Length: 320
Image (cartoon, rainbow, N blue to C red):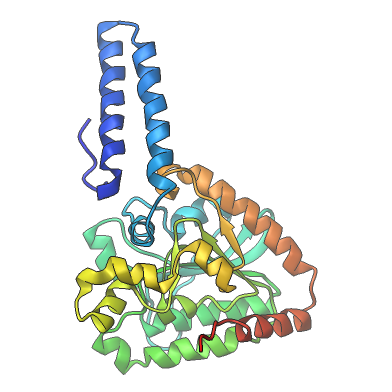
């Protein structure tokens, strides 16, 4: 078995043990030798190393984990959590943006509208999806689907995973800031339950453009921030190499965000991150979605809008 070139630096000790384990299992099968004691010893060592590594992650290491190339993306969760998903395209103004996917689906037998930011798995798909950085037409498409959900009384679930909105000339020419601003305004008064989950990166207004919700959940190793660590480092230190320091200063991890009141619930991930057990991660998210949607359905539309407004007005900590 070849080493995984996508493994992060702090995962290397674990990767070495996993290679040893696979080698031992292969040797046992090929030579018909009982190596169960040695295999069990390595398996215990792997579990111990996992707990040691992933229980002491720095803010920067959590950011790296949220960007792991094997981490499940929006469509991976859509495949596992929803049925009868029908993707809809286009903003009816300019075109379609593959960085945002969405459409009606069934969740636990109930109709919902699911909208997510989608990255690519390889260079070709990343170029098609613009590395998960939406253009203005992506946000306008998302709003079109949200308005449709409101019309048919369908709860909205949005999956956030973007380093930020696309900052290129074309996006500026087509008014990306205005598109995000309109989404913020319109989502604040939509008469249907809105549930947002930050599944990976939650970068700046690019994330917030589909995240004005009644309940905001975040996966354990995801992050949500006003700016990326690299962007913050470039402004404050004039050097992107200070990104690890910026990550610590930004308080962008799940536990910090709970304390600050920016998110409402942390969805646990398998030890080592969602990419190590996608099915378990999806299962954890399913339970959280069921619980939160049940609570939201108990409120009237007027109550939802009032509480949504109060929720976002209350955010922020002032230091004098």
